[in-house]
Image (cartoon, rainbow, N blue to C red; front, top):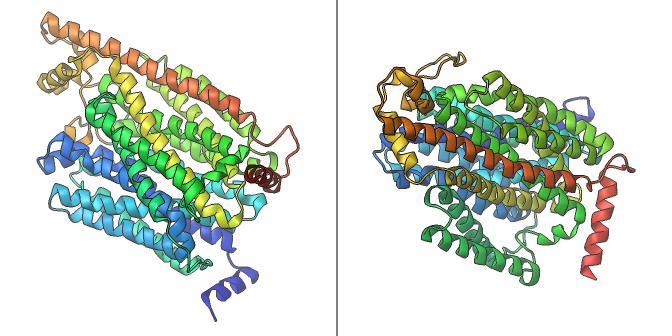
Length: 549
């Protein structure tokens, strides 16, 4: 008797339903992939010191992971169709675990970078296919619930990364930020092999080779340019060259997919569906809001308020907790009332919340920040997965893996560019040369004089560079230290300009939230008639048919 038949009989005899097996398997498998997007960032300084490397060389530890994710994600849909989603998904997890193990034992920087490439490649294959497996296993009336529960991993993993990474690095266990993936990943592989059913595969499916080459150049160059733009500036020759190459690559890729490829790597015609295109765009904004908060607030808390990386992680935790509570609730509500009311409410909260964050000062209390982060988590829980399930609901079953790859790859590009843009807005407010002088003052100032007061108890109050902490420069002028007049003036100017840059960066996110709120009002759902997935599937087929005429 085949494993599929045994599973079917177990489901029929009252055992755990297959859909829940898929959900559990995918959560364990994908959690570690998403966790790795933030856990390694905390260890950046430690890795730089460990391998005695410069900033430019060390930056590849982070950049190569994002690049490999972006390059392999478009390929995942083809691999899933060609070799079967189960086999390809489990293989992606295996590659990720192998990369994690090699990262943990790497004796040199460049071997670590090579292992990070393996991690990113495996993760880029597994992530979209995990979503497709989950979406295919649940009936239309429960797909919102399924992706809502899965969303708990999506929103909590990035927030837990700084906490877990900060603790391990603080204990001198930086290699364990990679080893921790192995038991989680092996469990995900084991559950996948035992529980997941084999999918039909298209053995004779041809690879869109020219599309793969163009997508690799386009996505890779754009992601690389975005990763270095914040440090080198958007007008730096290297950044401009890679942006130009990436733009040409993506335009070429689009032309190949629309007019040349018989079986496109990414089905760009899905954007002909108004619902798919709208949901995808609104989803991009929600991702910007999520990672924008996780990028901007740590800088505010560590640079201006003197919090350690571990303390910062705990301060950001309410965002993940609130989102983890709201996401499954939003999923169940989506099945009943559709996307429109959830997205409109979520982005209304997000817009107000973003405006409030733009008004933070050096004296803003930590309890108020915790409250704002809780509201932000609630808003993100209502929007991130809701837009994803709305977009995928317009796609016929056999095309779900390609649609998932399309959404994930575009979200990665938008996220990378948005973070780079926000970093540029932030640094543009600073007087040239001021930031470098601040680093010198930080290194010369006694830690006891710059230690932030009133820090929450996290089990560690150490401000060593091992945890990524930076002394609170803004406290120096009010300390008892004798400071030269020019130093005091520089510090006051830096803190004032940094707050201005912080406000401007969040105002851009505020404007994006207003646009998403407007577009979200055109998504399907209450108060108009809501018939679930069947309704928006019909709209999508009508739009595709009109586009083919």
